[in-house]
Image (tube, rainbow, N blue to C red; front, side, top):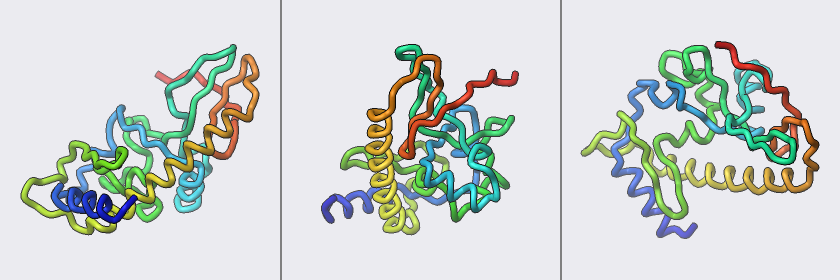
Length: 184
């Protein structure tokens, strides 16, 4: 990305007037699916003193093809209240180890443009603190997401689909998974 586009994104971030209000809305509710990569899961596991399978679950959109059920990637687990398991006092419990998507919310790059999600922390007339750091984090996020996508596609292409299997594909491989009925 050229400096002109980076500067334009940083200016839009600055103008968004974002300041985290610690309201926890971004980490709450049943529609809160935070995609995480295998490297992010490892960092979180170490920081939180948890096992990887305690942190993430398969992305919930399953594909049926040739007698196989599969999905691509992982999302952070949510508790019985449907909130992120790391939400504590309206803040990410292992804040310094939070995933890219959490670092950059409510911002996201789309092509060369910036998308700003609806967030109570975006207040018209204010100026975003640290827009340069947020822009840098957005660029790191895009690089990480592009790398994850490319590696996941490679894993999908090199593995055989075995009828009757349930698989999660990610950048590190094809992982057999057991679909368990959800508790009511």
